[in-house]
Length: 207
Image 1 (cartoon, rainbow, N blue to C red):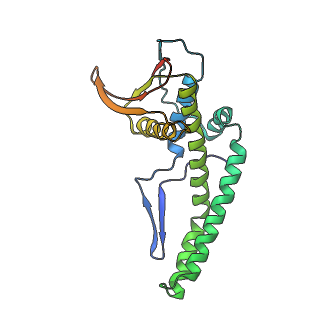
Image 2 (cartoon, rainbow, N blue to C red):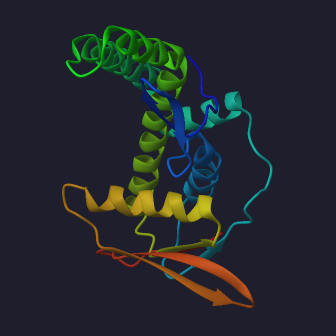
Image 3 (spheres, rainbow, N blue to C red):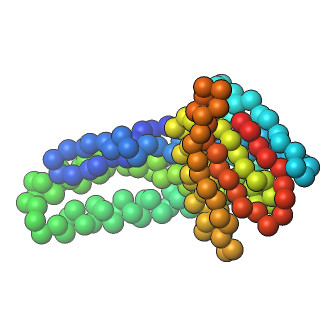
């Protein structure tokens, strides 16, 4: 198993296979998550703002895996478990197609065939998603542990998506952490700020 891009969410039916471009493969966000993890994983001093220059260079799948393994030590087991889970789900969907009382036999076979065609695609997307959320939880844990007050990044879709995911991870903590996500302009550039309400005063982070 490996990390690699496949594509947006497939919509599989007996009439064909379409793709929901609003549901992108989580793989596209892993490069940003790794950048933020590398930038945030160091010692902080109270009331200090830290700057980090975001890089445009994209890491290879192998490089991403090696970097993520540092923050998600159980990444291999996670990928194996997700592979098992999605295989069961695919098998369940094939069985549902077989038992479908609305479709005729020909359309049942077409639906099953379409599911089988997308088998590897579905498995890879699911693995990418599980690794992404493991990395997001690791990023949220860093923010909490180091009492980082806020992160400011460029207002790019990839950055804002990642910050929104971090916001969700902080909210589902055993003791939920309040956050706010705001967009603002500075020096002619659009920026997005994730404000974290920590119990102790900590550092700030500017990407």
